[in-house]
Length: 151
Image 1 (cartoon, rainbow, N blue to C red):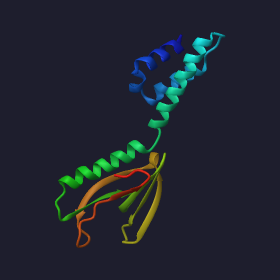
Image 2: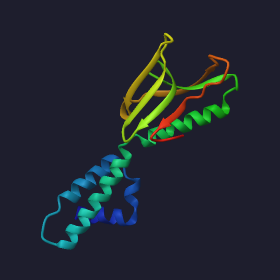
Image 3: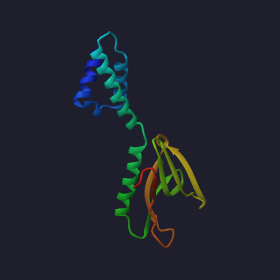
Image 4: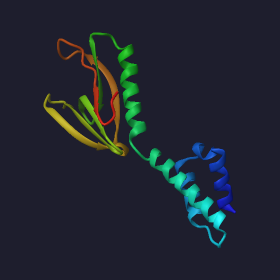
């Protein structure tokens, strides 16, 4: 019964609007199929594969990476020209950021004492903010993005 509803959600595309918890439940229902109907088994297996793919994209760092880029771009467009635009993570003003797919961010910058600092953060543990501050040097600094995913 539940498998038919899950297959229908896949066919209609409505699974895309479901929460991660709902998708997890759908996956459980797909894996719980019983009987010897090869068509039903094929549909449930195919639906499970699509749900796994959807969950893997939602449970990865790429959406957070894109959000960081957009936040920097948006604030840089609004900030006065005599201000730096930086991501701040755990007391570090970030000069450069890299994304190592699918889950990891590498930040390099300066800590509160002015010391060069690098850190590695799993996307699920990230607590970041984008700020603009008076320039620290002669030229404007805007956090740059490098690595596997470019800004």
